[in-house]
Length: 609
Image (cartoon, rainbow, N blue to C red; front, side, top):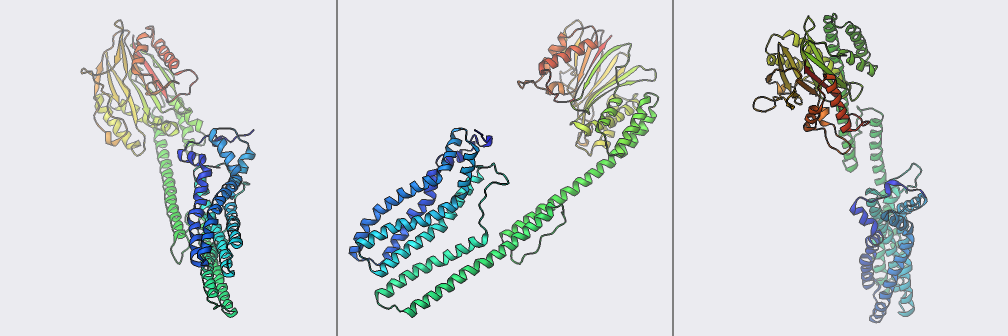
């Protein structure tokens, strides 16, 4: 037994009701037209055209009620037989019971053929059911020949009316249910009924012309025969007029169909050109505007928007490539100035420049270059024990860190920063931002720290302000026994006081965070607040990127500030490396080992010796 999973449940309440009561809704919407619209038409036709005598009307009044009831029962049984494959599928679908692919195909095929089956069935049902009543009337009521002709003409009129109306009404109902998601699993070889416009319009025009013609002819015939005015010549003239009407009714939809098909071909031709990639295509002109030409106009509007979007993307790509190339050249110049500090930097920068010229042919090279930009180990310091960890989420990290040393290799500053977003674009910006911050840290190391940061931010705005990226971070500057601390929109750093078991966030005297504005955004170019910190032996600082606070475990719980404080308080006091190992192990245990990282993680512990 094979099942189709997309049909195992009905989520839409309206669709579920339509499936549950499909048999009755189908009969009410189609047969209701017959019994409550066409049947009154039959009675009116009998009263106007057939001209029964009072005795015949009495007999007719006795015949039509049982015939009407028999007709309802006959129609319901017939429709149940016709709809049986569909009803079996719907019942299993509604109750969540497995069904075979053969059952699905049979139900779908019968469902799509319902307009044809129901229309043809309606034609013959009207002939048979009205024929029963007419035959009984002919036997019991003794009608005249004109009355008999009129009765059978009326049956034919009702049959033709049922043929057209049932097809249209059933097609609308079937289409509504298809639009709701039923029988959504289709294949290229699946059965799909087809009814072209020309035969459809021709049949509709013939029906529209023949029905009133037949009614008028029937009334004319019985009136003429009742008064003995009929003649062969008169009937021949009438037949000629009827044939002319049929001819006109046939030719009119032909020309209308030709017009419609021509406009449809225009739309298809236009869509094919767009599909082939020709966004400069133009739709053909039309003589008269209508709904189809409005489709062409809407497609043309879509083409214009698509062309504009494509041009914008090409221009943006060109601008970005030019910007990257310009920044690469500037990075090359900067790395040449710092060649004494890192001999590998020049070689890697040349490789990076070649990679950019080749349009970043090798993505992994970018990660290698970024890794080379970052210090591999903490600097040796007589005053501070430092441990750090960098764990990118992807190949390239959006976090970066740096240690700033003077010409005597003494530690003068530390930075930990986070570029918004992930991936190659954020990774490339870390290189640019690191170079700018490092250069300006040394250039303005004698100025006030907030002034130096303002100049750093100004250059960052100039370089990356046109992108959608920005930076957060913490910058530390060491002066004698004082650490100057500045927070640029980054999660607050934590401290631990040795011997007092006091742990908390770094805040000002009022107990408020000094978290300032982001870096690299012109609208947020503001001053930065600086705190001066003094650490005693054993005291430590803990800096980290926002991954630590935003990562969640399988239950959806995040690693909160309280969790960080508890972990930092319980951490060993031997070395910065031991503290870092404890904090990261606690974080991994909380999140769950083996879970993919949710952001770039960078952390650093600075302990006073």
